[in-house]
Image (cartoon, rainbow, N blue to C red; front, side):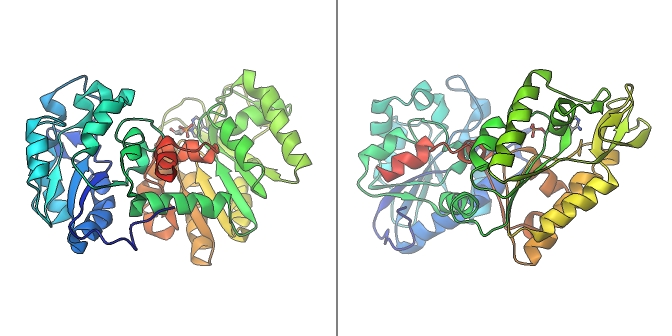
Length: 393
Ligand code: AMP
């Protein structure tokens, strides 16, 4: 992995692919964490005496659309970076080329939204070449889009001799490796969420690496039903039952312990206000559905989490968006935080578990919270991401 720490960017013009695809409401950035996440890499280049050309997409515009212009986030970028930022009016047009040509040491240029050109998403080579012509070096620090083979994330890299992993990308890759390649044993994966079908490629990949798998939340009911349990009206993918049984068999053969919930808090309706009652998970009455992990389940999961030295968490173990059914996910998060404080490495990645960690204020109590949803999931599936592969060629 070619990292930026030992390279001197003095007098270099550096194009940095960042992920500034931030949420916006009424022209205001509602969460600037993605901008903040790129700050260390930008600071390193500028502190060395280089200049930065920042390229990113914002939303999913179809051609030019003022509602997706980088001008909307310009002042927020300046605020977060605590530096003045020059903005270009186009992507590879006269304005961008002039401004990048005239860029001085210590200056930052933010290029207009890459996705104003369809060539970005189609990975068109001449578009990538034109972008590359603005700079001497290339850094990719956009983990969130590293699973896309777009012009700015993958195709562009071939035009540079000097190409690097940004500090954020490096951290993401190292965190995944800390679980998948050199995790200290016992290694635990916690998989939750609504559907087993979306998690199968992950299970198939991690089963060769981990010692324990906790399966919680909605996806556990497919396993319980496949094993002959009565799951009432809980969420279930009947067509996945043979696969669930196959996973249990493979795990047994590989000596991987699978842990399923033992009791579950249920309700009659899928709503926060619906009256709740706890049942054994294999014996849920027809008119009830499982919503959250029960007390015995939480205790059991706690014991496993606390004994693990490496923990990967993907997916909530209940409908955590409803306050009355969020306790299981919250307690699981607390257990992971405790285990981390006692020396375990914990990685939270992919969609809703990240949202849960944020909701319960546990970001600083786990080892690493991934910034990339789809990119994280594809990494856990064992895929080599195009954005990462391009840096290695
Ligand atoms: P996923 O995107 O597959 O990780 O699923 C996340 C979603 O799973 C969250 O919105 C949770 O509310 C949902 N979920 C977790 N447990 C259950 C459950 N027992 N029944 C229905 N949905 C659930």
